[in-house]
Length: 364
Picture (cartoon, helix red, strand yellow):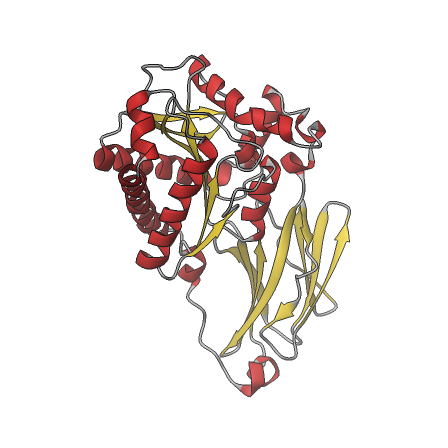
């Protein structure tokens, strides 16, 4: 089975905070932490097990003095042994899909405060801010994507829109980091795109594409957004097949050989914890783009896009418009059209950030 489907998630950081008589140890992952075991106290130390997870080389404790966390791998379990000295009670709770907090109460402030000081409890909602957005301009390099009726290449249109959107986000949402899977005419393998997103600890992955029909010119027109699920109709399956064809340009296509319908269902289930966020952003994207650009709203659809399989965060694939349609192609090739698309996408991201924050606040 391909590693990109069922590979273990990675815990990449371990952070410690001390305040009053409490110590918090936060485990941060690039992938959703779907399960954890209650701490087992042995010889005064708390042992925490994370099924189907592993510790990255970067997972080293930071933030406290007098606290140690040793990590090891036991079969498919990432195991952490936490030593905070004496304590009265220990508990564990989730703080978003990528963070788990182990809290010790009844500890010694003098022992655990950083540099002899006491810090206030961190705002838990900070973990839920939309602080990293990953933009994925489809295709690139030797993979030109679709060719428009006007001669433009999909790879150039998607990169231009992504760059403009990046600049808008940096201007309007300065606290949000933007990561690009490519910022020039470079060929990036499909599986590496979500790998980049996961390593950047992205909170939203947006793969930007241009649609096209096999026969051109073609009357099909408008924008549509896809989430990862097995396709419900022939049109959606056809779009996925065209986008997935990029793997033929990769050196090793074997990693995709087992991505049949059954394995795709497994991959979809792996994203269950954040699928409602993907659906919400897809809906916001469709409404805003259609309203602000006048492009026909083809709705939110689902299909088996390989580029979305490995994502450990809410994710969508956005088909901006049809390069096989003369009117659509002219619009998305123009400076005005690309600017309007980027602006509409920014509005959708801003609205989604508010939804994301409010949704998470309800869990605390």
